Length: 391
Image 1 (cartoon, rainbow, N blue to C red):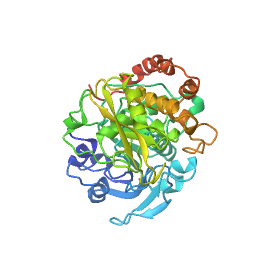
Image 2 (tube, rainbow, N blue to C red):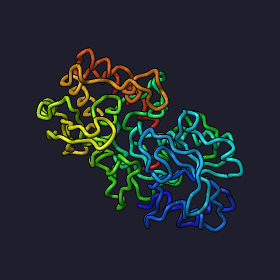
Image 3 (cartoon, one colour):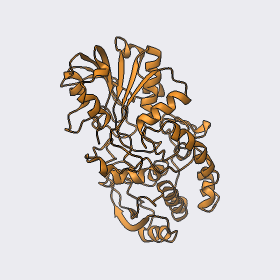
Image 4 (cartoon, helix red, strand yellow):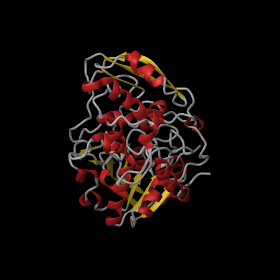
């Protein structure tokens, strides 16, 4: 496969010639030789690199989740100004008009992970809107979805639950590439921007990340592997609870636990559900930061045995339902401000509805927690097909 960055680099970034360009990048923005887009644009004949924009975690990717990044800096290698698109307020997520002044185009080249919680696709969408206002062209250099383009799962975000972990009505596991989402949002949100998507050459909807022949570069500090990405559509829900989702360990999201849980009880309860494509191993860990820092947590490790059969969202909901039931009064939903929203529980923002949390609290069955989700997923499928770039 040749990613969008490779295709554009091979033709000398002809689409950007004689333009002053801003690039939205992070550590994943490299070509097949691991040369960063910053360097490629800086050296491309006829292209002027005028600005760099960093999403959540920053241009260099070292900032932890929900940590604001300084507004303005300078790239050490090129001297180009670097602007943060993740600050202390929702307004800080959009490029300012003065930052775009003098630019002709914005280029987005960041690895997504296939889940609607992951904020980079919303950085892309907000930047598209800003580009439309500033009359800039917008270019997406596409990359494969590391958990695939063939499977989807979940519901669509309700209007009340829109946030930076669910800004638009996408399924939890959306089964799209960033370029396809850009096309969809341009049409559905009526973003009047001149959009150019450079597709991945050789990519098909059924292809795995391994078929790309490329190393997976962690797009954020707690997304080290494609195994992490596969469980993330379910396990990110842990951010809405006081259960550790494994941050501060070497296997975030693949393991979970809390001091008040007993590992064998957790694993046995989950094993009894016979969830498809997954098995659970009792485990214990001590986080080095974040929830329960320095305290021994018991829970389970998630071993995916069949990636095609595995349902990450169903698995994640089952896990936190089990933690609620086994944790008793010690289990708690997160109640502080989350992703710039302080009046809606974090778990509901992540779910895109309060149905799941309320169903867990009232003792409903696992199946009933997903009532109506399948219909929402079916309604989204024609849109997904309409903006598909890959067979």
